Image 1: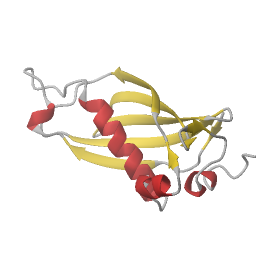
Image 2: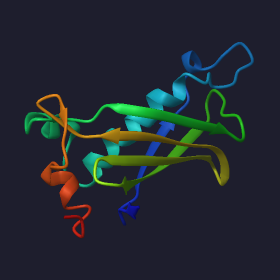
Image 3: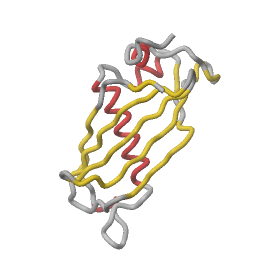
Image 4: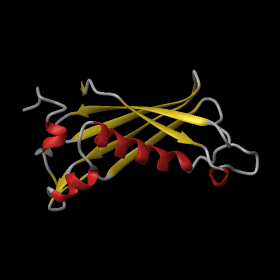
Amino acid sequence: METCPFQSTTEIEVRYAETDQMGVVHHSVYAVWFEKARTDFFKQVGSTYAEIEKSGFTSPVLELNVRYRNPTRYGDFVRIHTTLEREGMLHFRFRYRLFVGEVLCTVGSTLHCFLKEGKPTRELPPEVFRLFPQTP
């Protein structure tokens, strides 16, 4: 496993619509927040996911993991720290750590691969390749 040295940060203010009857962020919202964090990750390294798609690549989510440690609530400001790891020749894992202030609230990850013309590929978009310069 190879970890990209870059870490991005995304900030989200919890909206009322994202909470359940108990005033806690609903579990389904975390997948949406993870997507936002991935999008911001690419923007912060100087690219966009749209640019990656224009170059012929897609990156489906193969797996989603979430572990809830402390609740997040309406009005909280959530800070998401995102890192990227390469797992083998085809897979990449985004790791997410969500904080409210200094309190770790949630950890999670999503596993991805890159597809080109609908097929798994070892070829990487230039935006990703430059994050892992040691990779063949």
